[in-house]
Length: 65
Image (cartoon, rainbow, N blue to C red; front, side, top):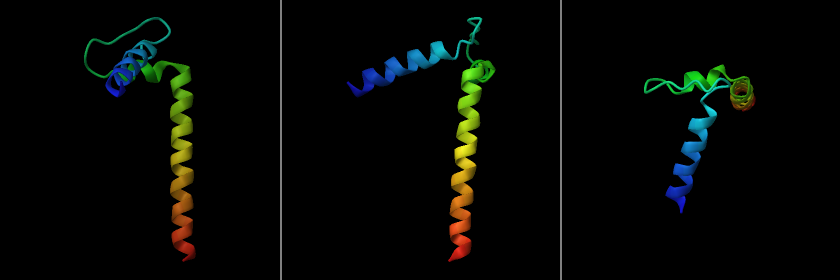
């Protein structure tokens, strides 16, 4: 079941990365199509924000000790 779910997710994510015009790269970098989509760009911004907030929080905790 777990492997089937992973395969299903890969198919869905591959279709999501196709872009608004249905652009798909054959081989090469699959993330390029995803970056062009506005929705995934928001996800990347949130990922970077959360990463930096957690990093700064850990850094400040280390400084206080």
